[in-house]
Image (cartoon, rainbow over all chains, first blue to last red; front, side, top):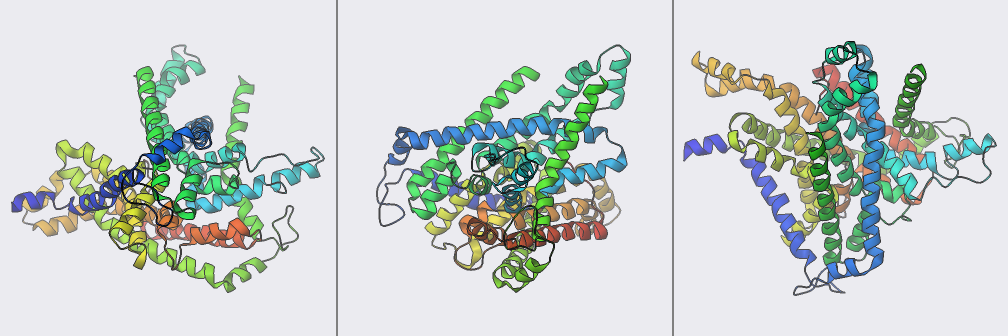
Length: 280
Length: 262
């Protein structure tokens, strides 16, 4: 017994923490989403599936779910487009430059998500930096609608989560020996062929985990849609917080949150299955 | 071919600008002398920093965030390092499930974890009192970062080192203190730094679990930003950027950070 304890005591605190404060609360949310609603208290007595019925029968909520997932997919794709060249660039940069470039990529992480989203509102607003500059240059008369719409949200989300794409891809590229590329080139492969046949397959595990991370983070983000979308674009997280904090409807809020988590999980699984089949 | 690589270079440059732009803009906006966030700025001034220094709400929020961050970091440093040692040494066949379990708070949507914790603490009768819920939430979301960093620095370690020390007569604890701990140290420092920054910046957990008393800085800032458009928020943001940078630079000075990879 004491041998068993000695071997396993190292994991005990973490196991207790995760069991008490992740496992049990998640089971509790599941139960909560099936409780009966109530007007005076957060939830009533007895059980009902009313929350889920409301979500799937009311196009307002159902569309918000679709829109949120779509924004997540778009953000992951934009991060992939912007992140891959950057990761390649850093992995090939000389030692001196690498530190600096690495710092630039990590810099958004060092600045809180509220501050970053706020920075985008300064840039994208109707009287913001971009619109003011364009107007002063005489290129536009009326401000371009950059904020309070899906465009602004995706731009800001892509910025906020880009490091989560670049870092895993960089990690995956660590194993890339520059000599392999040179060898392929000397054997007559074009630059593009080297990229397609050597670099991309090596980077693929990183791209895969980066895309999943960015998607999950984007779908569950609240600050950026709230500040940059200005509550005018209804995303699921905004509605969940609304249902829980402002309307005090715990069962319905839980049903919304769980539906978002489950549908995001399904998309992640499908994505993982698809990319693995193709690239292994 | 020349054109293609020039275009690629330009594209990369634009991405780097894209990464830095919002941060630079916030810092510049904090130096605006005018009453509103306008562009171009109406002259340079530090007046909004002085306004901020007189604003007790923000100062208290910063203090609260620092204390909360230190407490959560200390707890997850101990728990995470123990778990990392277990993962590298003893987990064996269970290693993969241990890893996934500890990364769970990172994989699960933060806002959902926050909601789950909120309900849970209400159901057990604690609610958001005494900041217990807030502290627990912060430990949970910082734990994966300590774990990942310590595992990285332990993974190259040869278990034979500790065995050799013990065969030469070192007690179990001495071997741990003199061999294992120094090997784990870089990971622990990096992990602690990550944990502090994550705790300092996290939003969802704090927003849901903050209760009625003091609120961490991001929450205070968010509430302010929704209804105010003065450059004071930019000044507060700039101070928070400087604080984080200072933490990184100090840690680098004293401990020599290694660039870590995921």
